[in-house]
Length: 382
Ligand code: TXA
Ligand code: MG
Image (cartoon, rainbow, N blue to C red):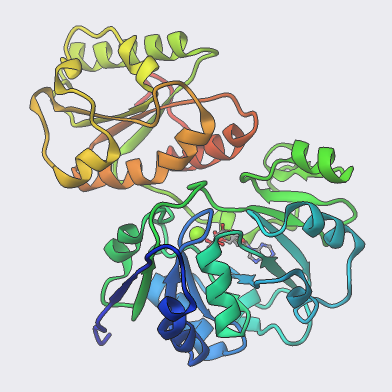
């Protein structure tokens, strides 16, 4: 494939239309533009141009049977994309749009098969990110966009994650700093008798009940493997770092620190102490780790950004990234993907990540972490 020059458009605030004009025109003209949203960076194409949409699959290396989300700037822009108005959708949009919620609805004939992978439904979302919304408005077309990573990599939450994966494959990346949530939107299927969460995200079943009175099922809990429909994308191996990922579970941070200590001690007893280990915990959790072999404490605080600028291993082969000082699922979710990428970059062989309660953002965090772990590995069960 011909290598194209990838241009980075760095946004300065306050945002002006002028800064987005080139990218908006490129989108209209059928070119690909990576742009920030409040969840993750998206790889956008004009949804009305099937050839432009097809080039998304090519750039990402994405299987053609995995449908895309169509992004619009205003709730009324959804009407053209769906078969008929939906009262449930209206209530949900009133409560959560713009925001990290994607609705799956019966599609209109305006939506091409390339977007929906031949399904008779379409996924729609109104991003809350100011830059994303302005870009879509300026382009004047609905924008089909998956996460802007190569297929199988963690979703990008920083512009340079996109650059890492797609440099030379797409013409534009809009850089507007880190994404607020760091995990992809909640995908809610409204085509069945009861709304079903196909992919958990920042908008939770409890919030939906509280704000709209609509009862939804969480497919990740309520439905068996054989139940349909599901988000086709959920069947693919996702968020897969090169390292083995082990989840340190426990009811509180002290219990989780103990689980990590046991695991590290066991590794050193087995003579595996020279394996390169990446640790992803809260600072409080990390400080309670009591391990005979790894003198990790002497390396000081290594944030994700520190490691980005210094991809080297200290002695004793353990590098840690604190997602925050205290255990907190929103912070852990926000840093998970960047941590997985950094551990990969520095050649980690084992990643130990703190498991958190599945409340609020914890549900989406654990969903992605479990996927990264390929189902999760118990201590010692390597
Ligand atoms: O936060 C997000 O949703 C980000 C930003 C860019 O908006 N986008 C994103 O897109 O994560 P993607 O393509 O990486 O994930 C979309 C998910 C996939 O699991 C896909 O299978 C599912 O939504 N999906 C898309 N259209 C669908 C449909 N018609 N029915 C069921 N699932 C659908
Ligand atoms: Mg994706």
